Image (cartoon, rainbow, N blue to C red):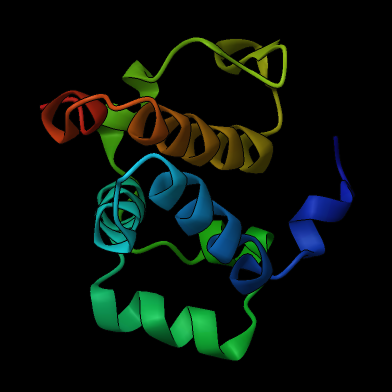
Length: 116
């Protein structure tokens, strides 16, 4: 999937959709932020800076301070594709995030979403 357009899409343009999806199901922006911080290792301040400066998805994941090793326990399908079968590492990271936000919107407890 090299060169997929999502790689050059700014993270800040998709972030409001993650938040809206969560809020439609009575979850919060803070919970979305917690998921992003858990997955990537960014602090809240770093996340806010990324949202302000228009960082694209490729750079967002390339510069992530500490990708959580427990993210590899995220299994299942997203958009009809098994996450474990995605070969491109950046696309797999994007799909991990999508899956976590889906789990949040489905009402799953944070402890289970964060694989604790």
